[in-house]
Image 1 (cartoon, helix red, strand yellow):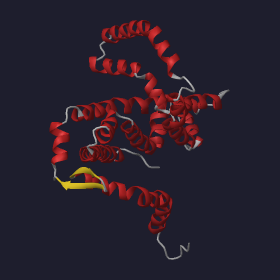
Image 2: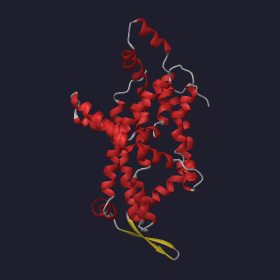
Image 3: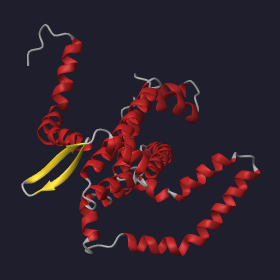
Image 4: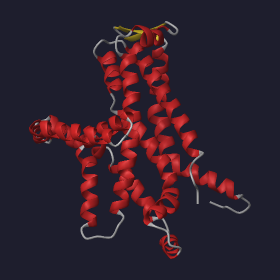
Length: 299
């Protein structure tokens, strides 16, 4: 490709288009038509006919039924947003903290990184299919351990709550910490990709910056907040968006949409639910992305 006479902005634009071209081609060939079809379904009542199906326009009736008539869609959607708001800060904090530790030089570092990425492999579709087929059993031992240690964990949590309350920690912050402890398995299993992204960002920070900071007498705490955190802040936005999408991908809302479509055969209502779900997720991503992008430091 000839770049003579092109401005830097034009070259960057062409490079970006080339980078997203595989996804763009796949979207146009595989997803564009079903997306438009689901939009048609959401404004129609679908009836199965011998020769296929028929669509009867109903306007906004499916959307009104989703929001004001359906017994559980609103509640499950709000609960999913609340769970996302709880999980995302926990996952990001754990991922950045773990990536900072794994970025240090110590023996067995490669093994330690593999161990933290192992939950991502175990949560893959292939492993889930093998477990559902009875070929492997991953959750049986975990459930037994959880059942046997539940009383001890509850006692330790109560002790920690009392200790935090005695030192004057606000109750809301204490509840958040307790919630994080109770969700530790979900946090670890959802942090593998984020740890890798943060680890790549940490490895790109020039070591000379830390050397200068040490010469100037900066502590490790000051080096983290003045060097490490600003340098990895662009990847915080990436991880936030990825974590939000990942948390919504397996939420109970998708199960309701699936059951409405393929168990009750109400494809119009399920399409309306799916579009409402997509709209909520899109608005959250736009707002959070706009807020975080104003706080990001680009070197």
